[in-house]
Amino acid sequence: MIEPDDSTPCALKLAEMIVHIGRAARGEDCGGAAGMTAAQWSALRYFARANRASRTPSAFAEFQATTRGTASQTIKTLTARGLLVGRRAEHDRRSMQFDLTEEGCALMAQDPLRHLTMAIDRLAPLDQATLSRLLPDLAVALARERGAHAFGTCDKCDHYQDRDKGGYCACVAMQLAPFEIGQLCMRYAPKPEDEAAA
Image 1 (cartoon, one colour):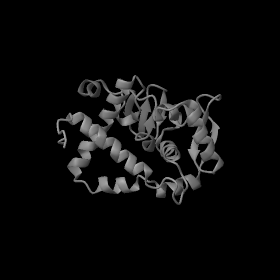
Image 2: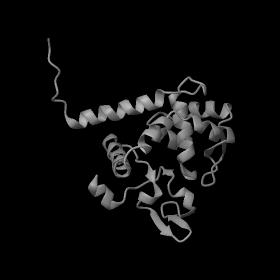
Image 3: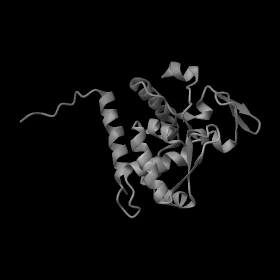
Image 4: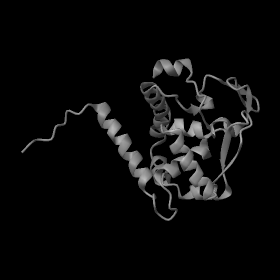
């Protein structure tokens, strides 16, 4: 009989646990009452959280680390189901931006991540704060390892400037409403001190 090997590096164990948690949370409702696939839930979630400049098929494809064709097919399915609606982008009339419809917003109440969200909510505040600090840094480090673009929120971005009634993005020279500051952005650039810590 072969004895179990407990010499697996800590980083590998943590990576496996993160992947396991992600799969368990994503797969819970897939094909259930809502009839949504994991990719469709990911898209709906992305378009609910992304800022207006990042709600495009190419940005979603980059965020999901998938092809533009696969991303477009997922968006097409959600649009046909009445969960997303497209319109010409303000900053580039050749590009399309997508928003959740009322039906899409209502469906988010059935998001498979809701149970993971509740589990995280039951963690001690200090543990939640630690995850809030570490996971975005981990996402940036992973993007760097893959040679991909990192996504993040304005308040943690080097382009962001705090203003009295919201903020300002120096990258696109655009005023930000307070609710936009916590949205995902494809133009995210980690602050130099965050890069040094990562």
